[in-house]
Each structure stands twice: as structure tokens, then as C-alpha cells.
Amino acid sequence: MFSLNSVPKTTTCTHLSASPFLRLTLGRVRRMASEMESSLEASFTSSGAVSGASVFLPPARSRIFKIIVIGDSNVGKTCLTYRFCAGRFPDRTEATIGVDFRERAVEIDGERIKIQLWDTAGQERFRKSMVQHYYRNVHAVVFVYDMTNMASFHSLPSWIEECKQHLLASDIPRILVGNKCDLRSAIQVPTDLAQKFADTHSMPLFETSAKNPNDNDHVEAIFMTLAHKLKSHKPLMLSQPPDNGITLKPEPKPAMTCWC
Ligand SMILES: Nc1nc2c(ncn2[C@@H]2O[C@H](COP(=O)(O)OP(=O)(O)OP(=O)(O)O)[C@@H](O)[C@H]2O)c(=O)[nH]1
Image (cartoon, rainbow, N blue to C red; front, side, top):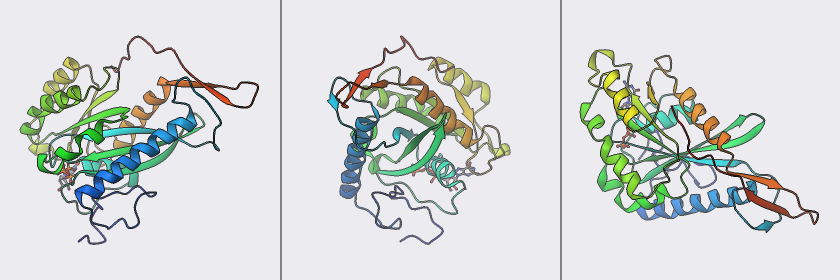
């Protein structure tokens, strides 16, 4: 069971969890992932991300951006998501089972947006039955490696391959994050090597530390940059027909999204 200092490795999403210190079975985690997906779809319905239909909208709800965080076990996915959503480094973590959800509401250009981070399990045995939930309705992907662990860097192609297999659209924003840059004397992955890899895969590279917020790229800045990019995609726009219904029209998509 969790001590009060440990990170709840099960959901931290307030509207789904009765107790943040609840230990969940994989089955329950799967059910919750489905609920999260439904709530995501509902949110986008009310905020405009549905094409074609003419609907009456409930009171305005925030747009939600679903961002999945993937990479080997122990690279610091939980700590990075916790740093962004809770504003601090967790005192203790445990291996993620299935997926954890963390959410933070931010305001960008006057619009309230919920950034929903899906902290996925790095260990194969804790993720295989959940994978399809991770990738459903995803808006952005964060690949994480541990700068002090070359093996975690070498695993990146297989994480990228997994994304491809789940048919993520090629214009879905992806970023590469090297974590634990505070451990200077233990760094194994040189920046130029990581940058080459990032360039090859057309992703921006950030080197950071979930532990020390003053090191290199700030975790806060990384996720906020991503949120700004997502917002600027403006996937759909609303127009108001005379009968007070709302017609949702897709906005023309740009031919390609540049993340460099
Ligand atoms: N020094 C340092 N340690 C970190 C940093 N981020 C995470 N850690 C440590 O790395 C270990 C693993 O962190 P987690 O966030 O649980 O890793 P994870 O990628 O979520 O692992 P799984 O849940 O198994 O996939 C923990 O002991 C953290 O305290 C960092 O920026 N600096």
C-alpha cells in the first residue's frame, strides 16, 4: 500500500478516483481508461472537435488534450508528469501498472484547457493489455529516455514503431525528452547523438530533469510548449446557425506540421 509520500501510481484524475491511494487491478484500470476516453470524446463534442453534426451544446467545457508519455521503465515518466501536474518531484515512486492519469488545467490565450497526461507503464508485463487505450484519441506523444542509461535511448526505435503500429496520424505532434540531466557525472547519452536521432525522426529534443527544475529545459516549459502547439492546430471551429444549434465544421488542415 502507499505511504502518504508515495506517488499514487493509480489515477490522480479527480473525477475518476474515489481515493488517490487506491490500488487498482488491471481490469479496473482498463475500465477507467475507457471512461477517460469517453470523457475525452464528450469534451471534444462540447468544445467543437466533432465534424458534420448539428448539436446543442451543454455549458462550455474545457478542451482536453490527451498526451501520452512513453519510454522504458525507470526513465522518469511518472516523475515528469507529476512534476508538471503537482509542481514537485515525488518523494517515492513505484512501477506504473497499466496507466496513470494526471491532469492540469491551464489557460492559453484566454482559453481554459485541460492537459491530460497518460503516464504509461514502461514494463511490458504491465502494459500489453492496455496498449490500445493509450493510443486512442491521442493528441500528442512524448517519448522519454534516461540520459544516464544508453539502453533506454536504444529502445526509442521500438517505442516509435509501437506508435506507428497503432496508426497514429503522421501529423500528431511528437517530442523527445531526455530526463535526469541533473546526474551530470553519469550521463551516457551525449546531446549531439540525441539531437541526430531527434532530427532523423523530425522531433524536437528537450533535455531536462524532473528532479531539479532549474536544470536545462524546464518540465513546465516542455509541456506548455506542447499545449500551445496543440491549441494552435485548432482542429475545428464553431459556427452558430439561426436556430441556436451549433454546427461544427472542420477547419482546413495544414498540409504538414513542422515541429522543428
Ligand atoms: N536524479 C533523478 N532521478 C530521477 C529523475 N526522474 C526520475 N528519477 C528517478 O528515477 C526512478 C524512476 O522514476 P519513475 O518516474 O518511477 O520512472 P517511470 O518511467 O515512470 O517507470 P515505470 O513506471 O516503471 O515505467 C525513480 O527512482 C525516480 O526518483 C530525475 O530527473 N533525476
